[in-house]
Length: 125
Image 1: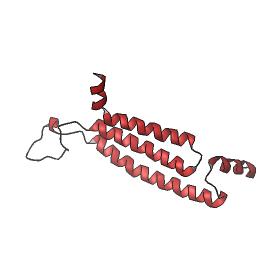
Image 2: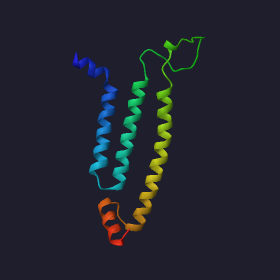
Image 3: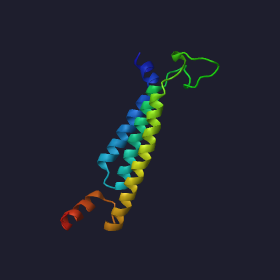
Image 4: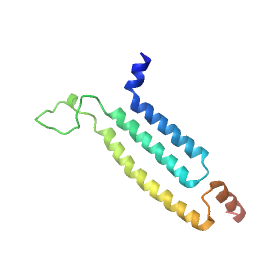
């Protein structure tokens, strides 16, 4: 019983595993680039989870073909729209974080968050 349930929810399990990996990376790494990668892994896990929850086996994309207009024939388009919107926002946030990381590197010549923090304290900021 448990094995069949695990196989049926394989996508959700992978999404949770990816989220955990990204979260651990975000917490444990001191390098800013590695933290950004961890955040991107977490984003991807959320998108995978939403896509898995929005898909219903045996149903098609909500495009009316051959006059079939029954709601039961199509999947819900809302999760797909949320995933697409989230990807656009994620790319924008990643670009902003990377640009700020480049600025920090140019100023402090390191990507180690602890080193940058200690230099900020020395500067009195």
